[in-house]
Amino acid sequence: MADTDRPLTILYFAWLRERVGRAAEELSLPPAVATVAELVEHLAARGPGYAAAFANRRSVRCAVNQEFAPASAALHPGDEVAFFPPVTGG
Image 1 (cartoon, rainbow, N blue to C red):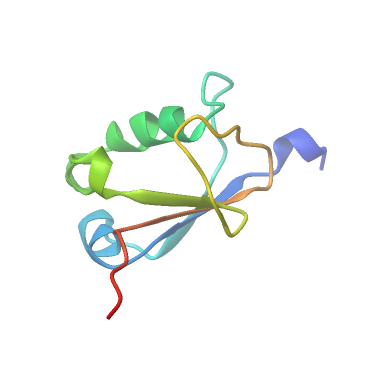
Image 2: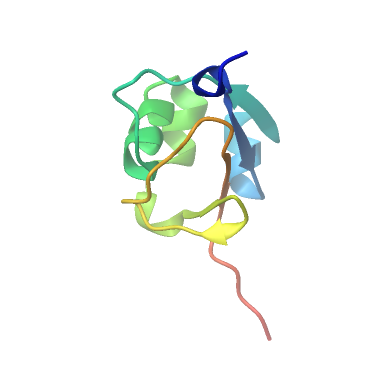
């Protein structure tokens, strides 16, 4: 399999997992999806659960390959992308 054919692994945590209805999935993306922001738009269009999960994009954090990533971060075949709510400590 060519490197460009490797799907993304997408992980969902906490209430995002509940709304999407799964903890993880592998997804091959169309060429137009090249950044985290474009991935979020693509996911939100997949159905009501995804739309609900990403309704307030400002409250969703993202990590690419276990590093916090901004919406402008580029995605590459085989990346692991995790979405989670803000974390609080105390």
